[in-house]
Structure formats: C-alpha cells, structure tokens
Amino acid sequence: MKKLSARRRHPLAALVVLLFALAVTGGLYAAFAPADKAQADDTAQSLAIKEGKKLYAVGCASCHGTGGQGSSDGPSLVGVGAAAVDFQVGTGRMPAQQPGAQVPRKTPIYNQAQTDQLAAYVASLGAGPAVPGKDQYSPDGADVGKGGELFRTNCAQCHNFTGKGGALTNGKFAPTLEGVDPKHIYEAMQTGPQNMPSFGDGTLSSENKKDIVAYLGAVNGDDTASPGGLDLGGLGPVSEGLFGYIFGLGALVAVAIWVAARTTKAKKS
Image 1: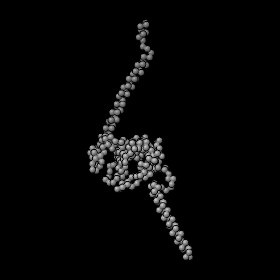
Image 2: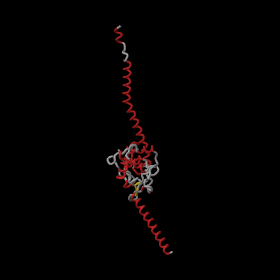
Image 3: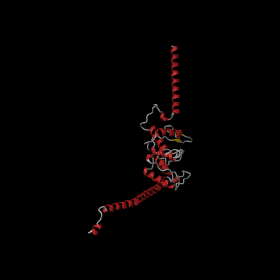
Image 4: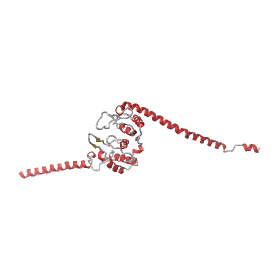
C-alpha cells in the first residue's frame, strides 16, 4: 500500500505540466512570429519598390536616367532619399511640366500610394532622409516662440518673416509657405529642394524643425489675427513702412495743396 501511494501523482503536477507547455508555446511564438512579421514587411517593401520602379520608368526616367543616375535634363536621385521624393511628387513639382528657372507647386499627378511607391524605389538607390512621421512635424508640444526665432534667423531672408515668400535672382523665388502641408515643410528643411539649402539634424535638430513648423502654422492659420490691422500681405515692416510713408506723405501734400488753394480763393473773393 505504501508503494502504490508513493507512485500517486502530486496534486500540483498537472499545473506544472500546463505551465511548462505554455512556456514552450510562448517561446516558440517569440522565436518564429517576429521572423514572420519581418518577412511580411520585407515582402511589402519589395512590392512597393517593384511598383515604384514601374512608375519611375514612365514618369521620371526620361530626365533622371533609367537608374536614377541623372542626365543633362535632371539631377541624380541616388542618395536623395524618400523624403525628397515625397516632397517633390507630393507637392506636384515633379514630374515637371517644362524646364525653367524654378519648378512651381501644382496639383499632384500621383496619389499618396503611388508617391510612397516612387519614394520606396528611389530610396532603394541609395540611403537618404526618410519620410518623417507625424509626431515629428505635429505642432503638439512644440515651442512656437522658439520656432519663430529660428525661422527669422534661418529662413526669413528668403521666405519673409511670416513665410509669405519673396523674389530671388535670375527668375527664382522663395515660395509662400501659407497653406503648405506641415509634412512638406519639414521635408523641405530635410532635403533642401531647388534653391533652398538643406538643414540636417546637425544644423536644425528634429525638435527645431518641429518648432518652426508650429510657428508657421500659428502665424498663417485660419484664426490668426493681425494686431497691427492692415498687414498688406505680411510683406514685412520695411515694405509696410514704405507704403505708409509714401501714401501718408502724399495725402499730407494733397491736403496742403487743397488748403492753400482754398485760402487763395478766399482772399481773392
């Protein structure tokens, strides 16, 4: 009887077996599930590159070369990164309608899915700035005051102190930033399109760029008030002061002439 009772299973044995099975199952999942997910991501990326290459061959290769190496009609795209493609194609600047001093913004030809595919293909040609995430350009938590300081220091020379744009040399211009998608503003700072210098993270950190985007949204938003009254398009204090000086002085001269004429006429009568 003692021998039989010794072989009887302990009440906790079933629980131990169950826990061991769960541990083994969890280990197997941890070992194989990430690999499956990574493989799925790689497959999706490969498909995006493949579709992007087709779009590139039709809309971009005639200027930028069949392999993105560039030509006399367009610069090399090797190493420009996905952010440059997302900006240029997303703002409608590319594909360009015709060569000129500067390519203006227009209605995009490709939708966002196609733009993403083109960006994936160009990014595969060489490493470059990636498309920023929403948390990088969202105004949430940004320092608007710091953004205004940075914008006036680095950008106002060309874009005007509120981003209204301005003329440059040889038919070029700094476009207005009013109504531009925050993502595209961030990407422009990343990549330096056309006449604009690029501001890498070593020059303007990710937080700095976010502050600048928030500042532009604050001064050009639908609810933005002009405490000075008539802002004349926000062209700046010099042009607005000149307008006030010329028209104000002109009005004073006109009043002086009118008073003198009335005085002369009164004396003659």
